[in-house]
Length: 303
Image (tube, rainbow, N blue to C red; front, side, top):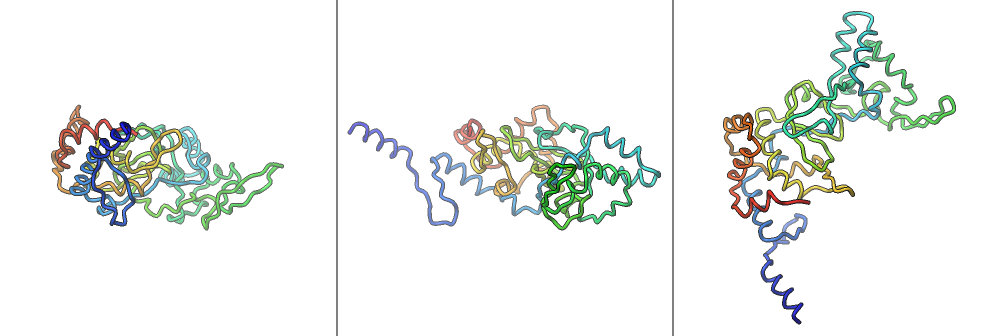
């Protein structure tokens, strides 16, 4: 009976009213978690309702062929027969980031390049002889997008998955390619430590990492996404791997409610401060109106 009394006391102290009448998933939250959730939802607008673009990075289907080192890029350019070909080829091969290159607020480029033959651009590979020669070194059987298995020199060679795209093109169409030529915010899809970075225009990104193109809102969204509130929300609303890493896909992130009422000049100012993380968190705490206890819970929450 003593044990039962302890349990009933605990239930009495921790109970809270839950609304199960909506179509939302049923989640059991403590009182402080419910209070935090209500404040986030009351003040913020989900990212899916913002006038922004969110896409995943480039899926090539064969990174070993389409993602190259600086040395290989220079070799391809050196093999160009005319200056016009060299200029076209240099424009086609773009700097690219992987998820592991993305850090908090910034990135470390590993001097890797993407042969950006996107199907949506309708390139003619014959206009890029040096690139064609390089790609053919992998074999059309490997690069064709048929899903077939071939026998080449007595060994099985698996083609890329079946699409309507050509052998020299990336696997995904990438109809949003022009967004890479604008500053954008990117993040890696899987990791223990969440990292969002603002990336310069002209730098591409590999899948499964994703990016946001938000124009004038880039700096503000970067600050919010790097805040402790974002970390808390993502921890509460994302799946994890067996090793405990967060799997942050677009579907999870677009649910994050972010306040639309903000001071852009102040955000730009604090992002240039040496203690920007502290200043961003202080500003975000005020935006959502969290109490001391709520903020303490958010900043100490762990998965």
